[in-house]
Image 1 (cartoon, helix red, strand yellow):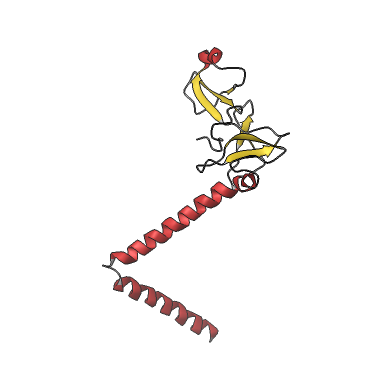
Image 2 (spheres, rainbow, N blue to C red):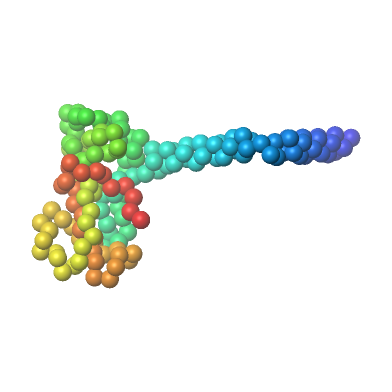
Length: 159
């Protein structure tokens, strides 16, 4: 008996979906509502990824693998703003709102400037710049990076 009732509920749901679809078939507002709902969910996922799954890059291993900070954006905002608290140092700009990234003085700042240039131009960059080779760069090009440009934006993603 329970099986028959569940089957009837399933059939009723399917019929209801067909009726609603037929009713709104020529109506663009129905499609617009679905489209807006998907955009809102996409934006919500992007914000969640930026806040909780995005970590500043501290440097690179010799094989080109990135070294990420232990702090995500959400954690960094707790001590960041327009000024740094006592025992914290400025490392760069953390977001589009101009908030300054502040981390404990004893920790290393993440990368805040990157330049892709020819390996032959190594003498143009001061000792503040490190250099690494990445596989997706053009042959002969390398990545010069530093964490000393505290007036620049923090690097969190490299594609």
